Image 1 (tube, rainbow, N blue to C red):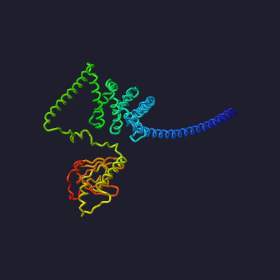
Image 2 (tube, rainbow, N blue to C red):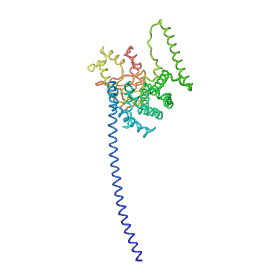
Image 3 (tube, rainbow, N blue to C red):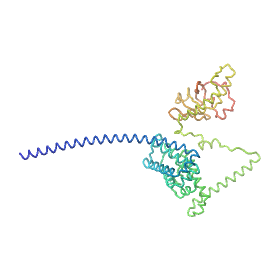
Image 4 (cartoon, rainbow, N blue to C red):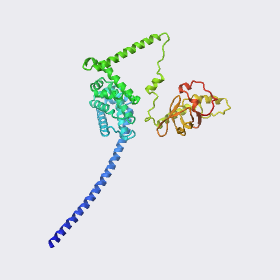
Amino acid sequence: LKEADDRTLKWKERALKAEGRVALLERKLEETTSQANNDKKLHDGQYQIMMKIGSVMGEIVWKSFKSHSNVKMLIQAQESMLKYCALTKGIIDSFMQVYGNTLPPLQSLEHVFVISLLGSITNLAAFAEGRAFLAQQELVVDLMKKMVLDQERWSFPHYRFIKRMVLTFAYNMSLEDPVAFVMLSEEKLVNSVLRCLSLHDPTDVVAVAVAIIYRLLSSSVQAGIPSSLPEKPQYQAVVCETKNAFINLNQFNKANRKTRSGTGKQKKKLSRKEIKELGLYTLPHDTIKYKDAQKLHRMWCGYFNTLFPANECPDVTEGRYNTIVASLLKADYHGAKIHIVRSKQPSVVGMKGIVVLDTKGTFKMVSKDDKLRTIPKNDSQFEVFTNDKVVTIFGKHLNVRPAERSVKKMKTFLFPDL
């Protein structure tokens, strides 16, 4: 029993020591966890600050590369430009490797930062001196190939802007013959661009993809690549068909010119159907901001004051009244701030915004929530705001295209109702 008691005491002592050590380790673990959390907060804050600084500096560089003189000056500092190209490649590579198919939101700092870098090298490649310099850098060509291959995994409409910028950069680079030959030598690159020629893709993306394919075909024809590759008869057939199409088109144009020689020269214009198919009047929903439209509104206020001066508000019985009313009905309302007072569509009543597109039957306006909305004219009554006036106009009086409305004789005695 005595030996058992001694052993029990020893085990108790060891248990007490173990409890002390466990308590000490728990305190150390809590301190380490607290320190790790503090470090994480600090690093997150530093990361956000660096991303914000990077996005701002990236936008500055992006805008500076829009100037031809700036590009020519910067190209002379080759060592610094080499470092910038390497930095750009590293950042974009890590961005695509981390996010893959699921890119961050458009408004995130990471997305804005990468867009600014991509925009800067795209602007740099838009000038002959800039793309000649970039074409000599193997790392830039590798970056272009990687982005062209990765862009087909990005879905619409969320990644439409970055997809278009990647293809625009590839097109600018393909204007250099060595880069065009590199793209032609890799079937994966050509197939990746061809897969952008889908009816479901936005018009601007398809247009850039068509420009790339046309440039590659032109380069191959000029270099005689089809004749030196007899093992690819399908590709030769495509080039031959393209040549025949151009020949037939030229013959058709010559015949038309002969038939029209007696009637004089006619100005070539796109039809309404062609304009619609090309998407020239299609406004992208995710790029028009209300703060940008406010600048247009300030310009429009100056234009509106020339039609309806601030110190003039004639009575209905005065002779000037009809003149001012006719001017208001013929005015251009691109940039006008409007409020829908009444409408046969209850969902649009009460909406306010700035007109960014005035068509025959609708107003397309952007609201303070940066959303683009289409408002029908025919069934609506609008209030138009200027600096010190509010003018009420019925949409059915404006149911004409702006260009035609300015020269059309308007009636000033129309019935004022929906």
